[in-house]
Image (spheres, helix red, strand yellow):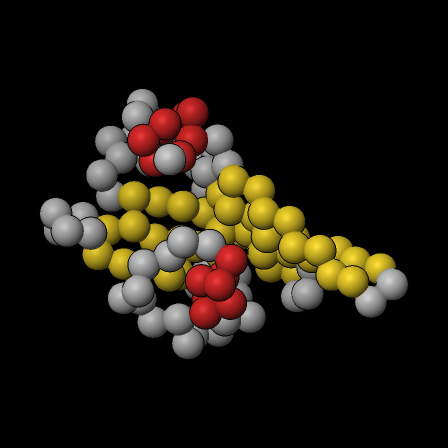
Length: 102
């Protein structure tokens, strides 16, 4: 699995290297305008079934547990049809979570 495919499903910045292969503990990171950074870390990987990425932003005063704010992409299907489901973690655990959710 390559992050390039995730970029097709989700709003990720242009600058990271999306040609790396993802596996457990792989990271996609990018710099922010104010010198801070954001990263996604693979915490669950079941090829062709499930990918869960933990979100971290260096601006956050208290880091969350990896599973608290994760993006989960799951595939299911039947009769030759594939359904991609995307679940976003609980931004409400952040003091300014609504801003990040938007």
